[in-house]
Length: 397
Image (cartoon, rainbow, N blue to C red):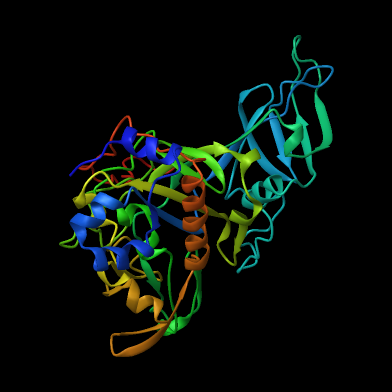
């Protein structure tokens, strides 16, 4: 039994598609059997919500009178990159606010940065643009300061080089002092443990071999209709995998883009990591077309079937030793406590399972209502690719 994208889209357009969330499909297949369920189910919705540092957006401000070729710009005192064109700028989620002391007085608080600017834009708030220029004959203006919101922009396009990591590390701290990381605050002597994944709801864990999610796939990007425009940076499918094909460490990633003017503020949130920096928490939903029974079977992956690796962030992670202290399933991690090296350790998540499930259901409703069609990828994500390190070959300058 096989289906095509065209056949599934016809059913969606007619309001006849059978759509289940990645949580619902597990029991459905248990009750109906794999072959029967594959005939009946057309789409499974997957989702994740959590910090995704490698995110940002392109903004077009339009031209002032007289015209200005903006060479330096700050939005709410957060620097934007202007080496593109006269009134285009890119702002990254981890950019710090001007004069933020960072970790000069460790640990820094990092109260506001690029991720918060993006949150405020989507929320429709007024922001301040301050721009400078060296001036040209065709762009004579040298300075500008004004207020704007997202509706004043010609375009506000989120363009994220790396989202939706396919599994990730679980973080602990074996040292004698508290440390501050992008995995949150890690207490000394392994007094806590953190992870960041929606587990059985997560898109690439439901499509571990990239059979349906590829370049050109449609995605639900914080409520906007987005697409996968490339493999994500650090895409590394050659990671170690379990027998079910699911990686036990960080593996595939996605590069995503979408129109910020269509996004929902609830799913675009600036975040601050004490002692580390700022980021952006983002909600992403991806529909998986059930083209055959094998694809359906992969979407029935449970938290108990997905394993993540524990890494010490006080030494092994920063020094790239490759050492793994242990492995746990997401069922174990989600219980709130695990035992590692003879010690019971409390566990918390940086991602939100409840928000990911909400996204699954929002996407499900849009598909059932015929408002979200699927796109067949124009190119599969690489299946055989490693991750190169940065080798320092010359003298430091």
